[in-house]
Every structure is written in structure tokens, then in C-alpha cells.
Length: 351
Length: 165
Image 1 (cartoon, rainbow over the protein chains, first blue to last red):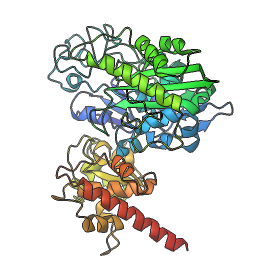
Image 2 (cartoon, chains in turn brown, blue):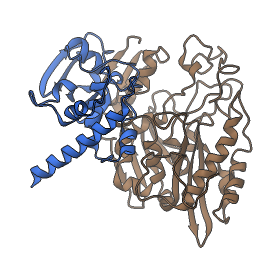
Image 3 (cartoon, rainbow over the protein chains, first blue to last red):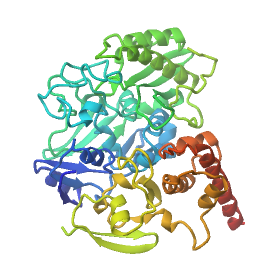
Image 4 (cartoon, rainbow over the protein chains, first blue to last red):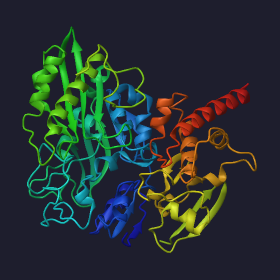
């Protein structure tokens, strides 16, 4: 780990001012940043510690049914907030399917958005990586890339965004609230992360010094609470990143889908909202045939970036599974293994 | 800013001067305070051997900067027993043979104390296994660990009921 200067601001304004110095990085829990500093991938000259700021660590349930979540709120605290679980069950399920209990107790909501890819070549400083060292190449192309992106990737970078939390958030139209040197602004989460293009080192729309202060879920997102699930396929039962995942949310009236939300995880450099698939579900019956058609549409643009063609069909199946589980209804209690695809599907579906 | 950190560690206030902000809570405990019960396994948040309670919550001490935790209340495995009387989780680990080599055990025990405090798993083995998935055991003592956590959870719930009565 490189040496760094440590700064402890007492207000958001002080933090933003401190982070204006080039080479600065914000420190929240540090569960991702300190890890990357230990392996030399992140080398900030200055850490601006957010842990002693007042506030920004709780949730406000808004009168209209939406919610505003402070960026310093811990993942576990959000997942276990009773009103949040009731209104946004797919988000709680996604949170509890991520990392370990220890990490969820520390890691923050804002940090979750900004976590870095788990691409092994990004993490290995001896490898070429356009994200870590622009212009150096991409050793993931032609390397071990079975878990890499199948949507939105470029010749420069085929890494994926590792977050579970962001997948239902983007499905539900979450908004990111940002403070920065130029003042306050808001960005829809769907526009927050950037696809790699020719500049994979740019991962979000945040300008230098800008700080995520809150996330907001709109009131209409709570309208899906009765039919909202997250499903995540992992290479082991627990404590693993998604190979592919899907968040599915439905509003059903008289046996028809009147509104739907679908997003995929583990497939791209950003949480992937599948709006064309959502449009195709409008007015459809909530059954396996409708869901399979929607999944085909969601993955229509997908193409392998290496030895990962299997992920395309896998993503379709996980999307169908998430939609079927959502149609069956949100369970009263989250399952023992949150987001597990091995839980039984009501109605005896085994596809 | 002076790099001094004041922590309550196992109920004792301690102030430590740091010569470097890079010190993690794990290294502070082990290298500066000779509290070596907390183990360094992977040092990257993957194995859980360094699990401690910070303000009552289980976390990985290897991924926590000490300077950032100024004012925190820390509980390590050394602070768990009441004198010679073992904590119910410690007693259950012995009763159920919940370890072989013992290296992961302090982290397992602290994680179990945290899990029981969170109150989400109860005595459902599947929820206990899921809740303990951040603690790896290379000897594969998981069966005994799960049994020990369940028994300790029941014993602690029983004690709480008796105390309430």
C-alpha cells in the first residue's frame, strides 16, 4: 500500500473541498478501496475520510411512498430496515445476496455503486488493463474471460460491474444525488455508470471531487412490492459475485401484466436495464412463454467477449426464473438463501 | 492532524499513537497491542479469520483503517469470556468439536456472536450457514460450527428469557 495523507472532514462541504486536491479519494468503509490499495491497484495520494461526517447514514421514508437513502448507510442496515424491505423487497434480497455478513455490516450504499470490477487482469498490476492503465491493452481479451461482459463491452474493456444492489435499483428507477464543487445535482442510476467505449478508465459520470450523498427510490417503485424478486447465479452457494443475475418486478391486474421492470447483473460494465423487454411484457399474461419472449429481447444485442457465450443463454434463463418468481409473489419472509436460483418455484416450474 | 486513535478495546479505553495512517484495526490489535487472538488469514476480507465486533457489529478487521475508527468500541475474542467463565458461543464450540486446527476459530466465534446478536438466523441451520459464509474453515469443521452456533443461540435465548422472567 502506498503512503497517503489522511484528512477527516466534518461536513460535506469540507469533504468536497478536501477532495478537490488532485489524487484524492473518498474513504467510506474501505472494503473495496483498501483491498485495492493493498494490491497496488488503487494508489490515492490522499484519503478523505467520510466516516466522521454528520448524517447521511439513514433512510427517510418519504410521504409519497418513495425513499431517500443516505450514502453512508451500511448495506446490512438498509436490508434489515423493516419498512424498506416491505416496500422494496427485491433490493433487500439483492443486498443480502452480496458479499458476507461482515462486509455488509461495513460497506456503504454509496460505496456499493462505486465498487470496481472483479476482472482478474484489472486486479493484477503485471497485466495489461486499459481501465487501470489507459492505453496498455486488455489481457482479458484472449485470457480467462468466461465471466466477462456479454453486453455493452468494447475492444478496450470487457469487464463487468460486480454490484447486486444496483441491479434492482436500476430496474426501479433509482436516482443518485451528488454534491460537488459545482453544487448539487441528480443523475438517474441508469445514466450513472458508463460503458467502456474507448475510455474504460471512466466508470461513472462523477466529476473529480463529486460525492454521492444519497440515493432516492421514487414512489412508483414501491408499487411493485407484491411481485419483486432478485435471482443470482453464483459459482458457489454463498459469498460469491454473480455469474449472471436478474431483478424482476411486476404489477399484475386481472391476470395481466400492467407494468414490469427487468434488469440484469454480471453482464456489462453497468447494471443493465432491459426496457425493450419491459415494453414487450405490457399487457401480456404472466407465464413462461411471455417471460421467455421478454428474455430473448433483453439479450438480443448480447455477444460473447471471449469464452462466455454460455452466459447469454444463462442470463435468459435467470431472467425467466426471476420473472416467474416475481409473478408467484414476493415471499413474506426472505428465503434462507437470498436470491438463490435453487429455491423451488411455486407451481412446480423446473426450467 | 495528529495520528492518534482512541478506542475502547475489550472494555478498556486505549489511546495509540500511529506513525502511519495505513495501519488496519487488525494490525493495530496484533502488532501494537499484542492481542493476537484475532488472526490474519487472507488480509483481504475473504476468509473472516480477523472478524471482530466494532460497535457491536461483526466486521473484517483487515479492511478497516484504525485511524478511521477513532472512538469505536471494539470487542475481540480476548474480551469475550467473563473471567474464567466462557461465553456461551465458546462453550458450544468446545462441546460440538467445532474446530480442528483452530486458526479460523476466533473469527468464527466472533462472527457467531455477531450473527446471534443480529437475530436474523434463529436456529435454522440453512440461515446459520448462510449467515456464517464469510468465515472459511480449511479443516472443514462446518458441521460442528453450525451445530455450535445453533446451540449457543438457543442457550442465549433461554438465558434472556430467564432473566426477563
